[in-house]
Length: 617
Image 1 (cartoon, helix red, strand yellow):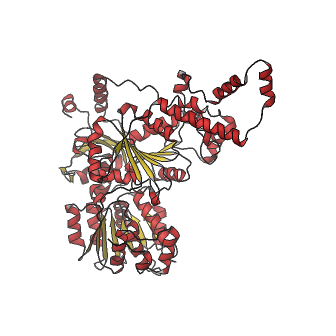
Image 2 (cartoon, rainbow, N blue to C red):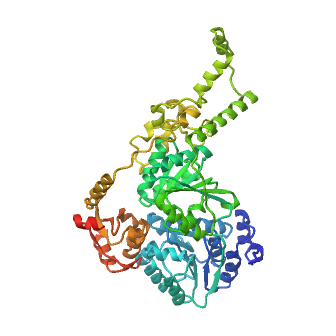
């Protein structure tokens, strides 16, 4: 379709000024069609894929129609996750920058109630929230819908998958009869079509087709590797390509924890992001990542939606996502604002069918490449060392040590031997076999980055990593000693450091060992956190669910805070989840008998499984 400039869409000078300040010029197809329809007051159903610009498509009209003199909620935007709610709130704040008196307020689980109460009392007009927390405020009487003129459902299909459909119906039913209803969704399953039929009035249908759902600037490749070698291959690729800033996606929270610790032990500045972390911890990690204080963010798909950070060089899919849409959201974190980006996927044998499904969904090409050998990594690092040395010699930017060289010459050493010995000590000896101690030690900082003082050094940080509680990061004042280079060993030489990138993989456990390990895990379902009860649900891996589905259905249906949901472990036909003792009865009462992923759900306190049940599972 014909795209238009924002100046052709009938927007106010304040909005056009904010749009120019952000850097937008031409409206995307979804914006070109949706903005005029929304400004006219019509109900709208928009169907478009990620990266289409739909946030601005509904945020711009919402801001235009907000009365800044009325200190009451006028627009409600529902989002499936807190991360997306925060992202939408940030976009609204940017677009309303020059609209005096217009205020936005995100409300979501895990954030302080007092802050949300204060924002509502002060008269925020545009409320962006998750269904669970919005319902909570409605029940408390702290959020009034009386003056609401617009409700927007963002990623409605995602909210459906997470079990929020009943909350959405309740919120829509509580809205004033005279309102504008807006719904954006990548797909329109039957329950969403029923919502549209029930709660909208002659909606304008907008559908944006796309031949390819991914961003053309993103170079997508995959490497087929054994599962046990993924960490080593990941490190090899990072160093071969000299990657400094990226996101690594894993399928489970446990894998995120394990991989983060592995990367930190090898000297990478890495941190994690997943659903078991408190909101304050998440915000602290994201603040450090945005400032480039950490190089690699290891995350579950909780970060795939709403993670808006510029200059991400590459997205690694350490594990494949569950579907093609999640893949699109993941790789959309790189290559933003028209910049080139890369997406690298590590695929083990059993994941190939998933990759093929993703390629069919995206209608794009993900090319296969060969895993680089250790010799290739060392050759590239050697060439880099050579270029660094040559540049230093040509510029003359080094302190002279003529006296020391003269002393060595007097003792009978020739200039070539002296230079070779110095290169050896500096880490340029590419031919020497690494010692076991070097292979097992942490990887040090790249010498070529030594002057980047705003980022943590990759020095040997065993004292910092050992015994570290990843859920409780030290305050800045406590990290001063870590940042003081004089108190810690200096970086290892460039090439000598690279010998420890690929260590020998751990031997694969035998079939008997794996069976014993799985049996022991299943025989201890009652092990749980203090203050929590372990529950068992009659849905597992075989029913294609993931931990996010379990959290979504429990929090959405039982209307409990997500902080009351603890560890989750998926088995074949069932799953275990820790629930706060105070919420066990409520969860049992609300969830038993409901439909979940096409199945009638049963949840109860876990008991030790019999051997017959374990074998069947």
